[in-house]
Image (cartoon, rainbow, N blue to C red; front, side, top):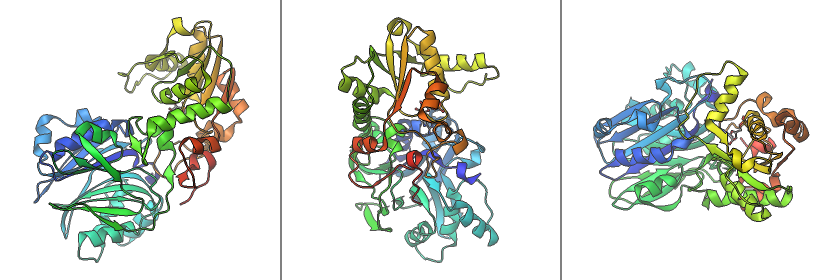
Amino acid sequence: MLENMNEKCAVVGIFGHKEASKLAYFSLHALQHRGQEAAGISSSDGEKLHTIKDRGLVMRVFNEKKLSTLSGKSAIGHTRYSTAGNDSILDAQPVFARYDLGEMAIVHNGNLTNAAEVRNKLIEKGAIFQTFMDTENLIHLIAKSEKKQLLDRIVDAVQRIEGAFSLVFLSRTKMFAMRDRHGFRPLSLGRIANGGYVVASETCAFDLIGAEFIRDVEPGELLIFEEDKAPKSIKVFEPTPKRCIFEYVYFSRPDSKVFGQSVYQMRKNMGKELAAIKPVEADMVIPVPDGGVPAAIGYAQASGIPYEMGIMRNHYIGRTFIEPTQEMRDLKVKMKLSPMTDIIKGKRVIVIDDSIVRGTTSRRIVKMLKEAGASEVHMRISSPPTTDPCYYGVDTPDKEKLIAANMSIDEICEFIEADSLAYLDETSLLKSVNATEDNYCTACFTGKYIV
Ligand code: AMP
């Protein structure tokens, strides 16, 4: 159960701004793509913390009236994604607690690999848990720490957890931001134009609230925010960077700068590399929107084959609940993605997507394009085959459900009924993102786990 929690999330922290909760709210809008299950904000007015969180999109959880109750000059926020199991309100973040030093709220992006072990030890000592979230472990570790200051207790607590964590803590008067020693998940620091600081999972949040990017929070670094002071940095762990390469492949927004580089540019590079190593004759290059767009632009530019919008995406489709028959399932894909029949009829098309997970999307897309009259459909994937699940914060299914863990590329091609299928290889992927050393985590493509 624990493994399913806290995946694919966004965190934000605003410090030293009179409209802190509003800025956190706008930031969460920019980060909505990282999680749509639940959203929440805690603010501090200096004496008391205020928290609102609920299931659903940021827009549904908050309104003007609710935001006005989140008073104070500091606020932290979260959007949550989880696949299986618990969509209980209890599992929304921020996680809030009262303890001997006062009040505290925490938001977390990532996944703790020793969560069950830590939790069992805490339970043996009498701790009572309210949620399934690994983040709740931190509350207990901080509350039980024998250190006198919150800062020392945080340092104490993070030394007992393992795995991926980009964390923001809020107390009544301070804010803390921390990345694990590998820096799996991103976290950036910015300066707000009319005063104060922001930390967020992606810099697209900065652009929205008019903040200027300063730098990334470093792997293993803890930043402390106090009133009228510049953020103070402590190196808690010796950094051994293993940034998540999947942030570039799929997860982050193209207008963000993640791990110091433009996501859009990295994806375009992947498309260019793909065109170089996996060429095919065709009339046009089309993306699977939205994920495949930048790589398709790169592929088209490098190959000289025209880029076309061959598939239309409906942005207003949320979850559809009608699924019982195959016919209805196909209809569901068509509701989200429809073929531009006039453009693709009689044409040889190269379709670019960022990844194949279970294979269902690709299979349906090929079928849809063929039905719309495409004469040939060549699938090109801008990352290597996804063969292994992620334990560091990206939502991937079990190995049995990953098509590339169970079939060869030829077999997958046959399954999705494409005329050809090719993936980017690991070396070309690393080249695309300018990885000069072994500083990225590629476990989902290679099974090389570090923790
Ligand atoms: P599938 O149908 O299972 O093969 O899913 C492939 C599609 O899911 C691709 O279009 C990807 O853009 C998208 N995708 C890849 N990874 C994830 C993820 N972790 N969460 C949600 N969607 C994803």
